[in-house]
Length: 163
Image 1 (cartoon, helix red, strand yellow):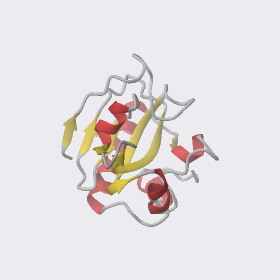
Image 2 (cartoon, rainbow, N blue to C red; image 1 turned 120 degrees about the vertical axis):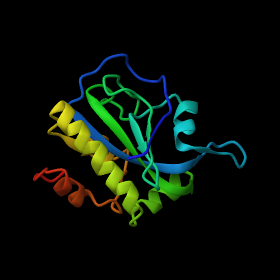
Image 3 (tube, rainbow, N blue to C red; image 1 turned 45 degrees about the horizontal axis):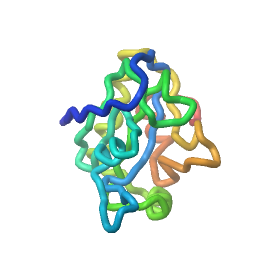
């Protein structure tokens, strides 16, 4: 797994990881300023948001927060959780991304890197809870969307419950 460290200062100083929350965001995100798009890790920085890891379409994992630090990725769940973002290949604003994640979008290398990162966290911290962003923010968030192979991920991670 190719890992790039891209530190992000936004989040609490300490946490004990108890769950994983899976998200999706554009690989490049519209900033609302003219025609400007920022690479996902840079967009999170600009918005004072963060995640522990972002997985690019080629399988590269951007590590932005240490596991024992909180991250600003899921309102009400920023402590006690590890946030991982699936970067949807291409350039997106909010509306386009909502449509895109309703169809299959994850790349093979990306999926394998996601599974590998989650398995590492599960082993290190004894995590027995994995959720979608939409599970912890129903009605407000829709990611990672119907185009994400959620049942397959749960199976590949050894979770028998539905998420």
